[in-house]
Image 1 (tube, rainbow, N blue to C red):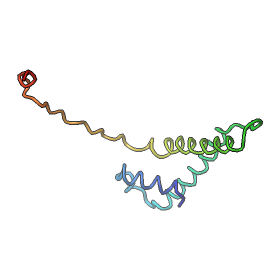
Image 2: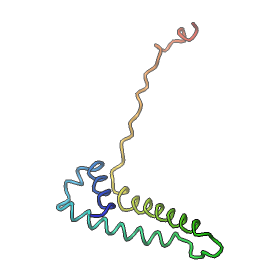
Image 3: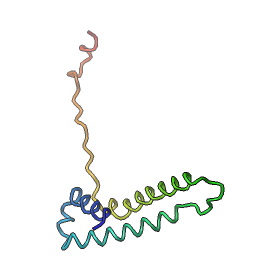
Image 4: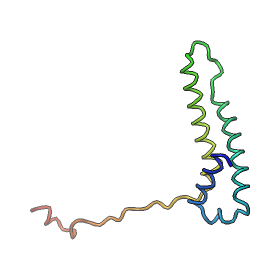
Length: 108
């Protein structure tokens, strides 16, 4: 299993344990998913890279390739891993007033 499959498996295990437990063979499932993610990242990265390298330094080209790879991974992870997770319940802060509601404490 590649790193994308491991990430997907850990993410689902932590954020959607009910769905994770319903997968018959997690190793096979996430190994296949990891390969699909890797292929999709490559395709997306290719689409993001500018083909015209004339007048650009090697460092600029390498920087662009690295950023394209990172952006592609972000897009593919969102589409193939994160979008299937249930929404997180946002923890709301308990608001406890510091006073009893009167302004007398503020006047002092």
